Image (cartoon, rainbow, N blue to C red):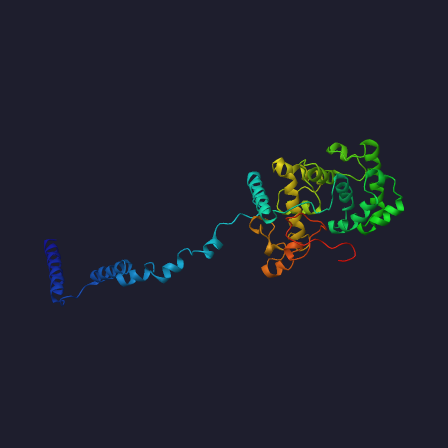
Length: 343
């Protein structure tokens, strides 16, 4: 057992010497498997390490033109990318009121000469002309009333008219039989109930045959100076386009618009809106491209937006043609309308 142990010790010593000799016999710089693994590990770490400045520069944000290309553009491009209102997001009531009042102010600058477009010399003539204006133009009424008032200048005269003769005089305005019946009835009521005078109260006017709130407000606002909102087809169409109301019933429209504006503005507001509806914001093809309040209109684009084409749609004095009245106010910028039979 002692010799075996001694032999084993000799073998261990020899093995150790062989390993030492092998290590000494390797050329400088040569590595074993462990060194190879360490070298490989070092290479992988180097691959994972940050790259030299050249690569860093390649990854760095580009300057000059590229950086400017990514920067927010100015002017029109910036405005085009500006946050837009979300579709369907409702306008607050306060914002709508402010916008509505601004539209009224701008219309006052566009139409400083706005006025009732019916010729009249007294409350009775205005009342009769307004009744006749249903389903026709103010121009046609103005061309018809000179002969009518020459024949029947007072309520008493008209109440005594022969129906067929009255009908013939007002035939150009359309629906002449129904209108003749209303004129005979209201004239008789004025003669019998109001001493031949047109009353200056809404409650009294709407009792007259053929007279509703629209007609009453026209008479009150323009013959008596009593503020009133005239909800005709033009007025109703525009206030709905402008999102001041979504009501269709004229009385509800009147109530909602009256709540937006001071009472002192009601009559002139009516004239301005109706003027705009007749000249620019037409029912079928509004002249959006020539509209002075286009930036305030939520319905912009429903009509022609090309400025040149839109200008060709303008009517009356804005389009270089006469307005509705044969006897317009002194400050009216256009020429008087032609008499019946000459247009």
